[in-house]
Every structure is written in structure tokens, then in C-alpha cells.
Image (cartoon, rainbow, N blue to C red):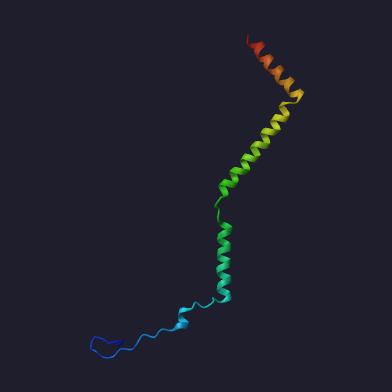
Length: 93
């Protein structure tokens, strides 16, 4: 295999350095900088935040509905609501 230039002069063979093809480990400061950048991005990443907010909202609504059921089943509240409805019906007609 020969390498020649345009004027048929012998060209230098390309030097293949096998060490250049092996990735060298990065210096410690570069790994730390990369790690900090990834950590900062992860802290500000809001992926899934809306889903979590909806889940918390639904849990709060279910808890409030359960509280209303407990309150509405008490005798005092039922008597008060019955009296309120009867007064409204009597005053209308």
C-alpha cells in the first residue's frame, strides 16, 4: 500500500495512534462540574409536578367529602337541615 501525492511524490503514511482512540478518564474537577450541572437540572425539573399536584388535590377533596359525610350523618345537623327545609316549604305556600 503506497501513498502518493498529486505530483507522484511519496506521501507520509497516516499515523494511527492506538492510545488516541481509547477515551481517557476525565479529570475529577470535570466530573464534579458535570455532576453538579446534572443535579441542578434535576432540582429544577418539573416533570410530573402537575400530576402530583392533582393527586394531592384529589386526596384533599376525598378527605373533605368524608368529613362532610360524617357531619351530615350527625343527628343535630339532620334536625337542623330538616327544620330549614320545612321552614322554606311553609313560607312558600
